[in-house]
Length: 88
Image (cartoon, rainbow, N blue to C red; front, side, top):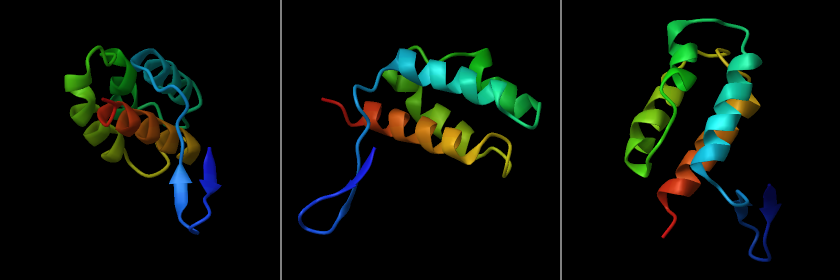
C-alpha cells in the first residue's frame, strides 16, 4: 500500500511480510511472466528459506531483464524482501 503522510512524504507499507508470502508472490510472478528464461525460473527453483538469502534474492530480481516479469510483481517482490530485511 502506498500512502502520503501529514509531512507530504511517500510511504510504502507492506502488511505482515513473510518468507512464505515472498515465495508465493514469486510463484505468481513466474506464472504471469511473458518470458520463460532461466533467470525467471530461478526465482522459484530455490525458494527463499532464510533471511540470510534475501540479499541474493533481491539482486536476482533486480538483474532480471526488462519485462521479464510484470512490473507490479517486481515491485511487490522487492517491497516484501526489503521489508523482511529491516524487521527487528
